Length: 376
Image 1 (cartoon, rainbow, N blue to C red):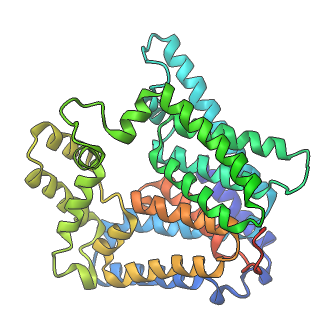
Image 2 (tube, one colour):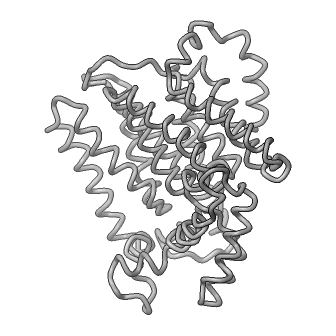
């Protein structure tokens, strides 16, 4: 289905794009993204890695192509509502599938089904990202005064919050909390907003922690009787990314990394070698080797795969986004969401990750710089 939509967008693009929409692209963060793309492609070709690293390059190009195709509709309600409807559809699909599994005899404790939800439609991190985007877009369309549509947007915000807690997407929860704090700096009347949304968020979180044992276990890692040494110690011992990032950091000792990188395929190969060598627990080691975990950090992945220049260009594109949109809440919230997920996931290693990145680029790269208005 996504590929069919891409074909449709490509066919319609020449008929709906306006020259004015791309007129000042060289003054936008898109310039840094273009330089990043040209460097990575040129470097990969020059170093003879095209064939082995094309699996990653094509996803980077897919994200860029999707961003360009979505330019004509980036600020339309159609795209924003599409995000909302997609998130609701994902929830409905997940709940229906869960009911079907329960009817087939699957036994699961109440509100402890995060692993099941994760397997129903897509990875939990991407379900969480979709929910976060839906919340941000809904918040964007809330009117400061009474409007009949406010109730629908508010209901969707509450629905998405509950779903994020149900699937125990810790990264999505952290992003929502950060975006909530961020919103306080973009509103003149903070009291009612803080009371209302803080009350909703606090109530939902409280109920979730009381009812959902899986959520408590995921956050505090207290489900393993052998690990009762406190939150920090448990996190280090039981969070896969701690092991993954440790191995990724070891790879940076290679002198070739800083200038030309070691390539994305070779990075994955060396990550597996690191798991095999440095994980002493046999069961844990076999698990990591079976899952073939990649770097799980897009910034670190770019540094290892293509070197310092690619990393700097990509980072500059994000800094340019924040600088351009520092006076508006909506793009700043999207930017924060993008950065947090990039810190926790290799989006260019998954096709669905490329779609999400393309969507975020479309929303942020060509958006006009707002005037200073804290009520934006």
